Length: 294
Image 1 (cartoon, rainbow, N blue to C red):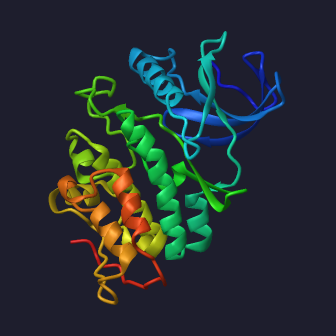
Image 2: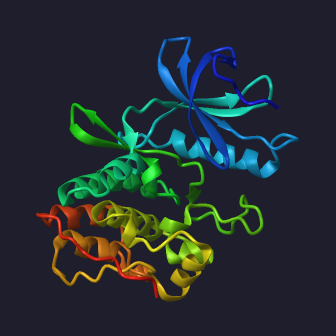
């Protein structure tokens, strides 16, 4: 089973033009739909040597079901899905211009508080729809947040990659291989790291971690080593934001509640995060010093 090559016409319809990215489960190509000339993002699931196992096919079918029901303009839209004649599973998404938040932070290191709040408001809009449908994203991180300029203004957002999303009421990890931890540890909530049942509060935690990084720089997150994550399971944060300069900074208070170690202490919903953000004017950036991990 061979993945598409640049210059190939995939499944008789999509002209593959570039590779946009690659992860543990899939490769994403820039392609053009010959039926209408539309530029699209073609996501192809990476097969094992002997093809896709039952778990991978179940994961694919779940992603299609999830994305087919998400229509918010802050969520990347699924256009088509299928299996090629050569047996390759794929999804076709709208092409989103711009760059991901990771690239923005790599270039700028931090963002002003108003920009961070604006990003979080849009992200909460996407999550509110998903959570209302009983779905969790489970991999909120800068790489999955696409930013571009539109008629709405700069820093318009689309949330990408619901590929490891899961229904909040689906019980045990029946579609997860034994010992497999899905997500990005640096942004995962303590309960997600422990393998405990998840609620919307876990996505809110991950969004808060991303907001802290955007506001204060990556140094506030102590690391991505597994030993760091084990410490987080035991003690909570392994990053330090003492807030000594201004402990009452409004946006910092919102982010601290979003990333509370206890899920019950976080905001109960994406909508409640938006209300908190709308009720507080972020104002001027505050420079805080990252603490060493415990």
